[in-house]
Amino acid sequence: MALDQSKQLAKLVARRAIQTTDTQRTHLPLDKNKRLLVVVLRPHQTHLDPAVLPLGAFVKNLFSQCQYVELPPSSTTVDYDRIQQQGLETEQVVIAMVVKPAAWHRFGLLPEQDNFVRDLISRRDYILVSLGSPVALESYSAASERIGTFSDVYGSQEALAEYLCGNSSHLKA
Image 1 (cartoon, rainbow, N blue to C red):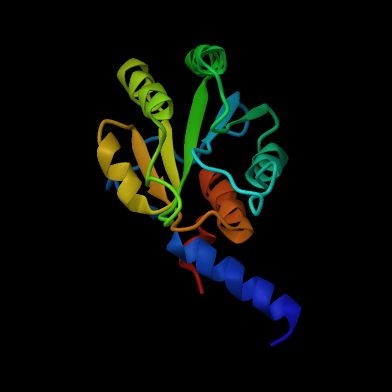
Image 2 (tube, helix red, strand yellow):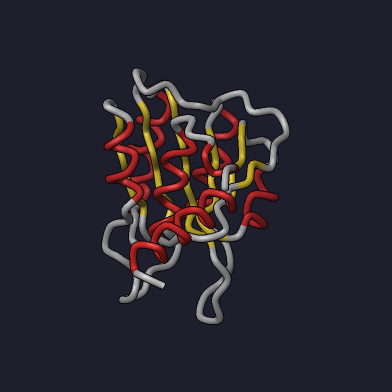
């Protein structure tokens, strides 16, 4: 199989894997003309992980008024407070969490990340995404909308960005 064919197949699989856990979509597609804040919670990072995820470039390419922020394990209370305030002031908010099972770390978010998500749930509507296992979404049933990608690889991040802007081709062959 040629490299281009492999990339196309990976993109197709990533698009088809996207799953919303809520039966009634009320916030998608996001409005490309409104301000969007995308926050990625990265509870664990290794030397194998990219310094910055490609999701940022994908959403910035599709949404003209997009701010993209990553909160790694080293984030401080000041970082969380600043981003939370931005989230309260921005018209559309997507919080993506990189959660995947591994033998070398606890599954799920760090306590300060969990508090961040729960506090936002109590204050406003937003979309919660699991870049990894959708099981992580079960703890946040109060979220406005929950989406699982089953992976955090390049193709899954690209497919998520397209999904957020209304590209429903993830269902097509």
